[in-house]
Length: 473
Ligand code: SIN
Image (cartoon, rainbow, N blue to C red; front, side, top):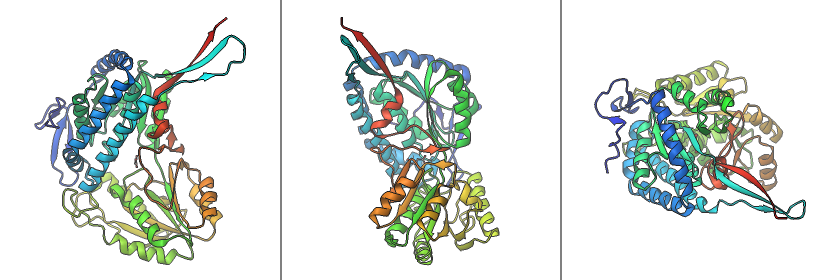
């Protein structure tokens, strides 16, 4: 099966198309057709009709088709990973990992499809039965990001399809090819084509149609807090259900009593996954004064093992950044920190390979007044702050409007519980830098969003709870 055989993708120039560019080489990989507002309205109407039939088939049948989709993703893992590395830039090993991660949501929600159930409550009055039903919310829309072109898509479509919803997805215009490939595989697995559709085009046009449509009852978005807040406001008129996975500014605290080698491995995994372009990346690393110097030394040594290059090349574990603007942001954070007294331990500039490659960078003596303490860098910059007490670390970690992920390393079991409870975050990694998987509820608090994806909670976001009151007099 040719995963590029989608009607919306062309290898040759089509008018007004989106160019998909390989960030490692600058080469144009494909042109993607833009969907205009009228075409989108037509697609929503098709989804509206198709959803009713999809919701009416047995949950077991929906589950079986999702399982076939999962198996196909494994079968096409290599081709999907190659497409991802070419359009997104992440190393092939990470792309393979993301395909497995993405497929895990399809499998998980295929299993969850059969577990949806309402309940019967003890009535307040005689001869009355109080019950609840869970029903699919209807037609949903999703807007997905470029940093995880497959996993962020399946984390949304799998619970939608499992619960009996239809879903239209606007994939990121920088990485649409992975999304179209998944749409083809879903159709091959027996998911009706009008029940899951990918669209692309002008972001404002598409999001306006999504937000204003009465037929769309739910919007799920992963992206920046700024855009999330705009979508939130735009959806107010049609009172849609929302899931928002927005920006982060993850603290990573290393206490004096931590296992330092493991803490450094945790930082490497959390900070440099996807070249630092994840919402859950360690953005601020806090080291307690007793281990501060040692931690900087071990981390600096470990960072020398990172090989920057084209993700298709053997041994490369840090690809290019997605765009020139990402490079500018990393540079801005470094320059600001150095101008305010931080010290550069390694990296610090664009990589000699050119393009959007950037050197893995380590700075120390970072303070709360620096930009990197307040904003998400979204790049390969590890800034180290020093702290003395547990209270101080918690206060610094919580001093942000974001609340997605936080991490800390300590071997003191009482401190593990105490700090975990005090951190104002939706997700906390304790002695680990990797927390994402299909079993766990992914999501944040404060300006990092609302709702949870994955896990047993994820399917609830795509269902309505209906209460039935039956008189049996
Ligand atoms: C994200 O960066 O938005 C998601 C990262 C993850 O799922 O681990």
